[in-house]
Amino acid sequence: MIKPGIASNGPSGVAVRLLPAVLFLVVFCTGCLPSVKRIDGGRLAGEQFWQGRIDIYGDVELVAGSSLVIAPGSDIVFHPAPPELDRWRDHPHFPGSELVIRGDFRAEGTASRPIRFRASVADAPAGSWGGINISSSPSTRIRHAVFSGADSALHIQESTVSIEDSVFSGNLVAIRFHSSNILIDHNRIVGNDTGIRFHFGSPVIRNNQISNNRRGVFITAHPRDLRIENNNFIANRDYDVVLGEEVPEDVRLGGNWWGTTDVSQVSPRIYDRGRDDLLGRVLLRPLRESPVAGVGPR
Image (cartoon, rainbow, N blue to C red; front, top):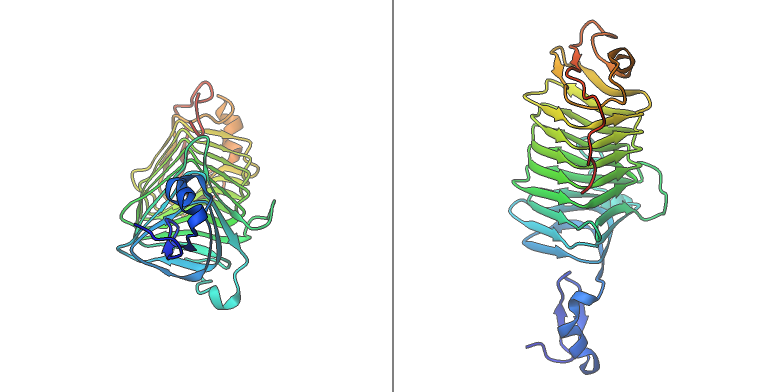
């Protein structure tokens, strides 16, 4: 039993002092109260639980063998990083505050209570914070989350990750990854510089709305056994799909909707061998004859 006047760590890890007058409220209504926590860089170990608003300053690392669970409705706010707390700035990291995941990660909101990952300033431009850097994570699940204002909202390396029912907008890159087992399903990826960027991977990318980005999907090197199907590619400004200089093989992207059934209208929005003889071809057929119903968050 917690005694009045004794400091105790709540679910968010914040020390609180319980006064007799409010003991009943604290004991029986902890789920009703928003938690506010500030993290000034550093390392997290063990079982971590975040709820409510979390303010991050600098680079925060969840070490291998640990876990982090974020409750539905939480607001994860990335502030400008003081130089002494911006530990990693070079690739595969990014300048600015970021969350580095090396353990198990669960950020699963609900349709009515999504988890938000954002910059501290409203309408902040892309690149205002670094991103969530997931490296060698044995298990990461992200669902019903909203990402905005990041350099690379999710950067995934050699991890097992599912990303579902989430929204990415106003980022330099929404999702980038390499050498990972990854599912990207039922997301809205809209208004980023690049929607999805990857190399060396066997992703399953399906049921997503990928629109109004400068580039929809950028495959930079040697994809393996990818499945990109049942997505709606609409009005991406430069290209719907770009093959990088290390993709000499053909890439099959049949079964997607490109806004039309006329291949001659889709081809100009594809950067492949039609523009560079050293690249493979994007194989568009079979084209869908109508938009995919029910794409985006469920």
